[in-house]
Image (tube, rainbow, N blue to C red; front, top):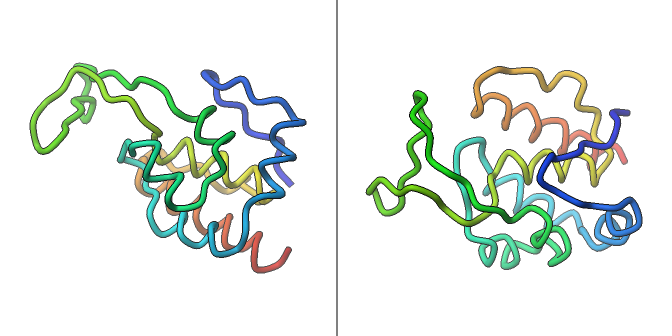
Length: 130
């Protein structure tokens, strides 16, 4: 099993993490895996509606800022924006992988979309075997 993933902008204690983990059903995992990707920043309410526990939503939500690098310009309704407040799909997938104790050692892709797919595969394998 992989070590617990730590997001640099999250303060997520093991106690809270264990409590949230116990609240995630297989249906919620399936919905999250279907919806999340390595590119989108979702409104926190959307993830609550998908079943992600509030404690996780609170800890994953942050401000994301546009950058000048390739692929770094954020958009909303097809218009450039300086920042978005929400949850980055890849952060949520990493968190979910830790929650279901997925083996993520093969999640090494450099592309965000491919990396998200690797996390999804690891998550689904963990919930099917665990």
